[in-house]
Length: 216
View 1 (cartoon, rainbow, N blue to C red):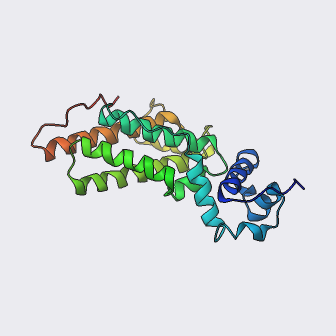
View 2 (cartoon, helix red, strand yellow):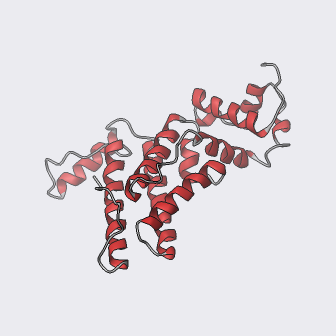
View 3 (cartoon, rainbow, N blue to C red):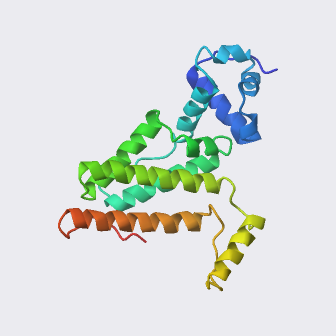
């Protein structure tokens, strides 16, 4: 058993993230994390009320390396950078990626990245109520895309079933992207950004906010 370390929330989340990176999500039990730290599992509960609270903290820590976009960049460029950054960070940590998808982090890192999203949407020209609704749409898209990306990487039997269904709809010859792939994510994000731009233009009487980049 490893030598016991002085426990703190930071030490525990770092160890849990390491366990998940090395051994995958099934290894992220309180017992396995405690073994990594060389302590009794009950010691973890002095810092986290339950396993879900610990995984929430680990999910937030996984986003620590996602940098906030340049505040002077166009709003759509900022949104793309934040969402791309979150997706990439989550997939670098396979043990916690599915948890990030199911419970978007609300800790310090989740809050700073969420603030960047809200600011960009406001700069797009959306009124406050639509800023909130658009942010919810983006979070929902990112969560669903990330959940699919966790299982992406190959054209499995399910992909071939979907491809045959697409062919049956007179779309023969269309190259169906792998579910959860980066290409699929980028295409969907481009559609969302174009929709936000169009919505902002409608709300502002036909003129979109200045500084928007091309959604390509």
